[in-house]
Length: 396
Image (tube, rainbow, N blue to C red; front, side, top):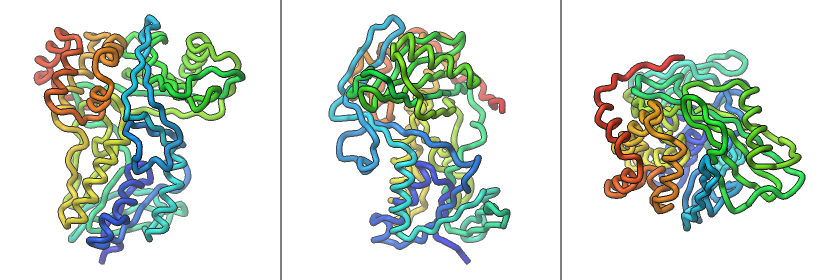
């Protein structure tokens, strides 16, 4: 006997998005489904508040919960030369996880989604579907059976890969004593920070007003830093590069995102499917996940509405993953100067095309056009050697 048609594990962006779609009009009007969402109890297994960013035109489905958006994007080279682009009608949008969760909770309560708080310990195929086993916050066992299970819990570590870097960052939400920011301009990459011996570092600024912003320090490298190092880098960036003067830190966010050419499974059982980061939604060369998770959950909802097996297409096409694999190895081997490469792309590729490329939505000719704007010799050498580089399991 089933407890639901579908169980969704995890209440992050992917899990909440899928649960909402499966209880919405697209599925409900064609083939009613009972949906259960299993989220971890409050505590260490729940991620702290964070922000999700993506670019799209006006009128998006989540515009009601967008906290801020920007119409111009800036990349600043190590020499201080800045490239400012207007990708209109695309805008860079930020959603705060707390706002998204609050909105999704209301939507799911209205639709009759079943909610459970439990630590999931195992997911396995059983006759006619799959079974989710775990325990609640009191330690009592929880067991749910469903025809389909979608698991958005982040994987413990990526699978075997030729290259695995980490995008790791800490950000301060700051309030300054005087106007210090341009509200209409998002600084995606500011390379006026000291560079690590191996990897790439940049600042990232999203103004929320003239005196408020999210200011982050980000590295693409092999290992995370300790808290003191992040705070030291942020202090230098805020004081010496941005010249903010007096400010207070009102909140902190931080994270670690694998940047890897490891293969992420689309299916882990006859009735079990990973989604979100676990299902390969993160773009290897950028770390962006939110838009790809939306494409993935739309495809799953459409398949279930039509009575098909809900095996969604890979969030990023094979061509995009291959190009990312070349870029990651070129950065990891030091063959290309990452700051010069990204600054050059923003300076020479039309803004809308570049953003579509970063989102994996360009065609083959557009990909070639972008590729021609990268350093030809080191990228070609990397592409030729890549098939012969063995995949290895990353360390813990």
